[in-house]
Image (cartoon, rainbow, N blue to C red; front, side, top):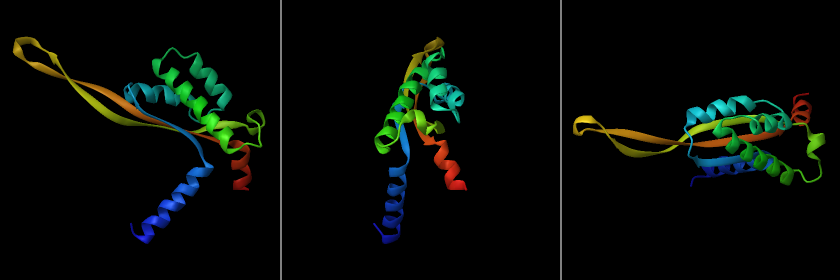
Length: 138
């Protein structure tokens, strides 16, 4: 590995230590359905987002609820001195990317076969403190 690449990799690693995030890989839900659930909580305060996801009828919202709890727990581990209630946490970013696709075959009329694509996705949630962001901008 070259020195320029190593330096940028170390800088990226230092930046990730400050950010509280959680990842869910190969979730067996189509990315389109997961993006609908992710759109409900993007930019919303954590308390409100947890309430929205808990009472949403979508199957993807259950998985997102659990992932958001994990992200909040990661934030708590990185900021041991502060309380969650005082932190004013919000969902900074939710990204849903396409995961691997399982390809299956379904029988069709006249001896043909149709391809069935069972899609999965990768979800990343980033949780941040609104108060710190306001202080950094000023």
